[in-house]
Length: 194
Image (cartoon, rainbow, N blue to C red; front, top):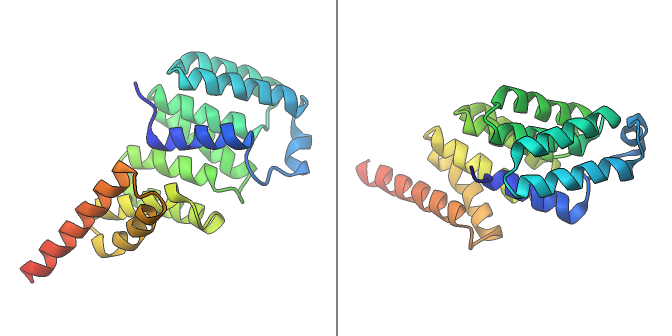
């Protein structure tokens, strides 16, 4: 089983930043252990996820959550591991917990949107990716998610501007280029048929 694009982006984000943006003191004080220990569990889980060792990552995350029951990064990673294990309802619950604990951060909305997209719930995914974009207007993943899911709903004229922005931000991304080209082709065929 390979990591999905959204999970790879999230892992890269967590590796580069080390934690989620906006994790204020109120969130940190809820944790039972110092953030360094929670980071240790997160770092180990990230390494396991990168190695496609999803069950082991989940076990590590669950141990970490017993010690740091409100750690947003651990809940986010838990959702990612569960998703890769095919335990989609549990993954959804973990991502909803991320949103509940840190509603101003985009990452929970992005990952829940990606999960719902995977489950075939494009309309709900669009709403979540839009929530993410309101929190992070430069989010490539949110732009791509909105465009891809609007296209899946047959709403090509609405999808095109989002995919154009995503393509402009990352012109070498194959999935973005494919989706954008597909939407432009659909718009051209619709205009020619009219």
